Structures are given as structure tokens and as C-alpha cells.
Image 1 (cartoon, rainbow, N blue to C red):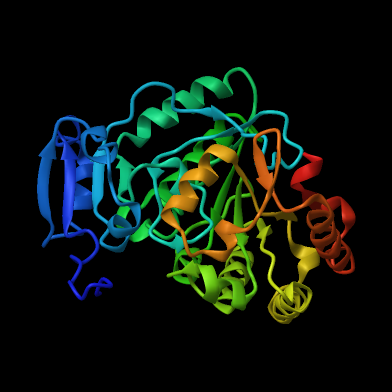
Image 2 (cartoon, helix red, strand yellow):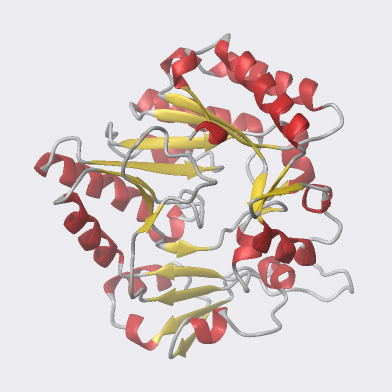
Length: 345
């Protein structure tokens, strides 16, 4: 892979930084064994590498490295207002990894993190323990792949499989207590064939028109591959959600999204979906400022958005037009009670 000046980047994960505290963890050894040619660099704390000043996010992401760390402090967070709760009272998210191997121009992680490197927290059991304590008080709807795409790094970590098994264990002890969402742009067709389904694991596939994928969802699977992955997950017995979120504006957006739905219709019986989500692009003002610095030539990032209460989104008329278009088209295919808009949550 060449940079613009003709120099070659290192291959992805040529270097793996390991916190001193993480060295003795069994999972550290398991992950390192998958990268026999990587140079291992021992560090005191992941922030010494991840939070350095004057980092070039774009260049780092082109030659992404990994940091293995131990997570401390609070391990569960209340769901953010720009995210959908899908009608669940106790809505949380957790982060067992930070950053993504995909390169979507509009990804809020580019405004959230100072580094393009991938951080994996090896103490997954500590997150599980905090969840167990919370479940003693009330049930939980938990999103586990907001700050990364766990399916896309499953071959490195095995975390998605571990989450599914954890949900199974918790619901055997307290039936109906834990429901998680695994959101992904990964097809993962072989994955769905090799894991046992559970009704408490919602597999959520983010779909975009192929023109949008080509323009700004770099390194991600095609629309057809994602649809086939969703169909495979359904055949395996998992509850499946389709996420038309974020919808992105382009000149012929109606035709692009209409064509996308036709592709979905050809592969998936939408009446069998657990639900669908609809939402146009929105992002916090603080994140967008950094994103615009990292993506100076991106049409989606540089769009003149409207700011309401610290959240940037398309001008209200356009936002409502796009979302209403999608809701109406989806209502022809699935019950209205199964369509969730972010503005309604």
C-alpha cells in the first residue's frame, strides 16, 4: 500500500503494543499467536501510545497497529441520545475494543479518538462481571459494538463468540435478563454457520446503497455481501435487525435507496426481521470538528449541516424528507411497529 508521496506503509498490525499489565493475561497470548510476524512493544499504559499529541489519524489508519490493554474504571455506560434504545428502558453500551478496521469517512470515531490504531481490552471478564452485578438490579439492553466492529475483528479476538456464550449463560440464570446488539458491516457468513444462535443476541447489519459504500465506506463488504450475511444469520436462527442508519444524502438518493431495498427484497423476507432502524447522519459538534480536520476532502463530512443543541444533522426539511421516504418504503414491507426512527427514541 503506497502513500501519496510514493513511500510504502507498513502492513496492518506490523507492530503490537502490549501494556505491562496485559502481558500475563491468557487472551494476550491468544491474540499475539495470530500475528507471529508482528513486532511486540511493551508499554506502561495504552494512552502513552494512543493519546500522544500531534498524531496523524489518517496515516495511522492506513498502517493500523494494535494495542492490547487492561481496562479500568467504569466498564458500562448509559446509551447516548443520538443512539437508538429500541424501546428498552435500561439501555447501555460497553467498549471492549476501540477503533475499527474499516475506513468509513463519516465514522464518528475519527472525531472521538486521537489515534487511528486499534485498542483491544483483554480483560473481557471484568466487563462481564460488572454486567452481572447490574443484572442483579434490573434487566439490560446492551450494545457491544458501537466503538468498533466486533465481527470484523472476530478472527483476531474471538470476542463476538464469547459475547454470545455470555448472553446464553446469563439468560439461563435469569431468563430474559440480558439482550445485546452486535452491530456490523461485516458479512461474517462463515461465522453465523459456526455459532449457536440465541434470542438474546440481535445481529444488526448496517446497510447502505452500493454507491455510498463505494464513495465513503472504504474497506467494507459490498451491499450484496452484507445482505447475504444477514440472510445467513437469519437461517442460523438469530434475531436480525437491518439498520438503514445513517442514511447519507447524494444527488439521486431516492433512486439509490430504492434500488438498495430491491436488493434486500431479493434475499430477505423482511417480515421475519426483528425490526429495522432508520436515521439520517448526525454527529456531535465536537466530533465533527475533528472529523473535518481528518477528512478535508470528504463530501459527507464537509456538508453544511444544521446544529441543534450540539448535534449536527442535515437541514430539518431534508432530514425529515429522507427519513419519511425510508419509513414509507419500509412500511410497505414490514409492520410500522417494527420501524424505529432515532428521532422518536
